[in-house]
Length: 312
Length: 293
Image (cartoon, rainbow over all chains, first blue to last red; front, side):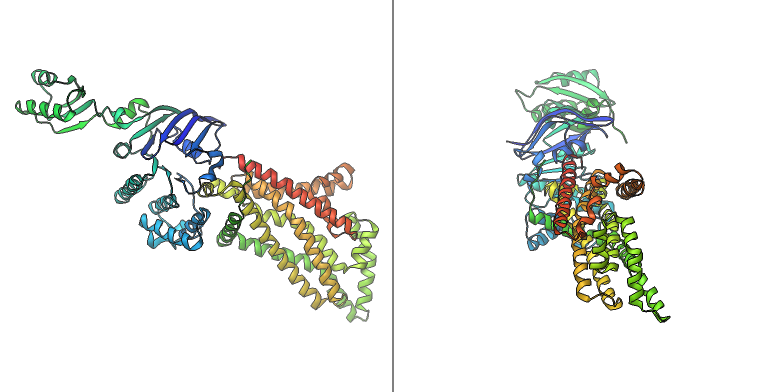
């Protein structure tokens, strides 16, 4: 089942092509990442999916509905937009009540839903404040609160944890996991690649408006085919040969001081079995691993794919 | 173009927009400014009465002086400002309370400016701040556009109604030459004419506002456009017939049909206003529906 189907989407602005024939399908029920350097087209793509921007060409369907008729998805698709502003002089709870009423709730139901949504993001006490008096973090959390209204089946979150303190960011990540476990499809854009690697099943990487890849995180990081081990010192030739001799190991390559990528063939034995044997052999020579990680970091792969074009 | 209009959403959008506008202070400024201008117009219209009452203290009958003044200067003034036929001028000056006619003619000329002052920020500010994005997944664009247009119209008409009410009370209390019934009836007709004439201008400002991302630009274009249009068609049109006829390309050219003695002309005026409203609304909706928000 497809949550979002993106077909040949192109968006041209007068001076730039923000999206260039992007095509991929997001399945239902997982957490997916949308990555790319600044200006890669992530927010534009989100805005096209949500119907804020009209694609120059191509089609987007969410839950089977063409997004040119986006309001047919009332309450089923929600979004945390990146730069959208709330009305400055209106209490935030009134604005959320208004959004909830547009979703079809009665006034009483909307008031309850708004209070619950604000409580979820830890803003129960701030409902009466006007948006202009909120801090950046609180403002962001109000944005997230409105994205939880209704019974969303798909939620788009454009940099949900950017600018939040660590505790608030963790609270948002917990909420995302909670929604995921209830079957909601979430698409998250973030520059925090460790966060994306932990949360997401698959990621789309955009660069200069083009889709560079749409892959499972596990495939990108080769988590089932590779381990990175770090030692306090470089391994000797004999130690490297001992690692290479372990059944299932296809090769060992040094990629930094004391850091090695070990390619494995996991068809006959599990990674854990091979790792245990490697560690067992090396410990006897005094080479105790400081860390063992599956695959390469998503960040490494991302930098390779976008040619290191990460901007500040 | 998607034209899925939900009455419930129209009410919600217009109600919230009106509350937000008032809270932001823009609505209050508009209200105060409109009241001041409206009452100044009423003051200009009734000023001769006070002068004549002063004259009466010098021994002359105020009513006689008043009637003489209306008969002497009225037709010329009416013809210069409205290009009305002698019959129509007579209807406004002799058959209806002349001072109220003067007030109504000035009020109709002021209404387009009032409409653009009220409506310049219907959508432009929220397009610029992307504030509409919270609404777009929850209601059709048509409900946002029309809801805000309706709110602007209702609010502006409420201000006009207050101005008319104040003028009615003042005239009945201070101007002794007209019967209460004829003043109220003529003002009621004038109020209806104003209500109809406001419609296309509110729709036009809704369209202009939907094209802009900056409210100030929307205001500037609306107001300057109006001034330019009036200068071209009215002032320059005094000498060039083609320019004078260009006034009929906008509702401006038909506004006095709404105060015409002939009921058929009034109906035609209403039809023209409704037609212009329809065209401007459709153009605005089409633009709003297609544009990036």
